[in-house]
Image (cartoon, rainbow, N blue to C red; front, side):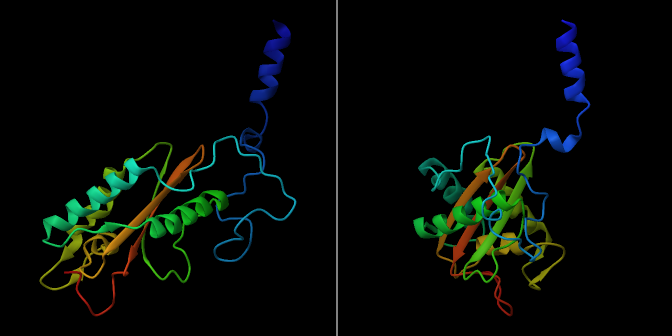
Length: 194
């Protein structure tokens, strides 16, 4: 019994970093570049204590994300989007990279429109992710075309010219990252969303 207590005391006295899975880099990625290097340096083993994200989102996630997007578009009279497996694969790849590099940033030089969402210490549903973006509508004034605050996620969802969407989600033990890509992209300077 004393041996167990001593071991427990020793374990609880260890530095906090030792309690994280071996190989995690701090937020900001491994490299000094703005987006970090995509993966750990060559030869650096990073055991993952969790299952890797699926290569594509399940059909139920795709349907839920599409329905949530189209409900927002319907409120402003815009036609429904179509699901794109190619956009979903691109979004899933970026979500996986953001988790692997422990960063949170838009894909550089992305040819698609993109919305990002992250949650720490929990999980989100497709409906809650899209609702968070759609809540930005409160800051958008259609008559003047002016946004007070952040509106870009909302305007991307309702952008009239956008026809397709594809989304992905990746998780680790600490956070969940959602990425949606849109084609054609929205938020074109000088144009209104609808």
